Image (cartoon, rainbow, N blue to C red; front, side):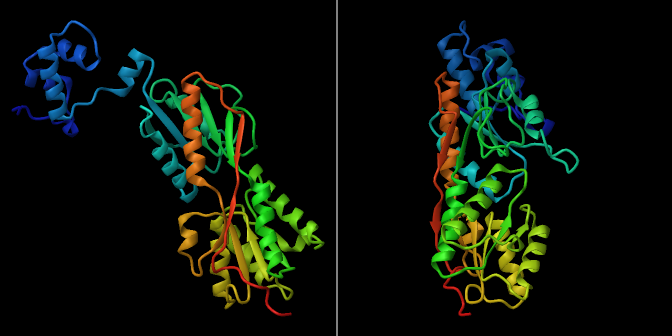
Length: 343
């Protein structure tokens, strides 16, 4: 079937009037068909749907949600789109296939002046009219009650509030530090993550635990704040690597910080891993393509996203889910770590 109707000129958007004109029916008839209401002959309904398909007509999501009190859309709320959140999104998107839900990725308004509470502002804009439920990536505050079902991935404050899912930061950090110790390193530095993140605090705890288990005294001079910020990480790495008694290895709280250490080491003429071993945490795609490829603790980012989606669908279906799910981190050895240099 072919129509002679051109889309409305406003941004090329097809309107319900365009569909009615092409199908030779009234606007109310089109409305009944697209909203699944009774009172339209089968042949007429078939023709309207053919025109809808041909013209690419889309009903208003907000208007239909107000009528049905359901959008069949799940929101993925992030503070910003960076490597960590993008990998989570890939897992969420893959898991959404076949569930009947579409996925809306939304970056909340975060400013230096008010980085806390962005998720509340985002939920107030989207909940009920655009999304049925939300997956929030690293929320800054606890949300014991929300207007729609929510699953939090790696919340700043740790488990609490809505259902949460994260990876084992303590266990992963212990494994990362143990890997360096088993290679013969004794002067192992740590570049911390953000001080307000429970997961970053837990990674420092795991680092300290592994040192203690190996009988290596903790040296506060070998710990620096990186804050998951490039400038802070560069400054921290330069301070550590220009010491007369510089460390032979660095465990960074995330991969982006570890990549910053690699960059500073290269600028200082240090060879990795001959002069310095470096290990990160996350296993973002950039880790494998670094020079040299970065040894890291792999968070199962796709699985975290996928399981968060499955948990949220269960909540939307009225089922109970665990308050806290934790997935293990796995050591991925690449070329940035090797035996400690001879004294």
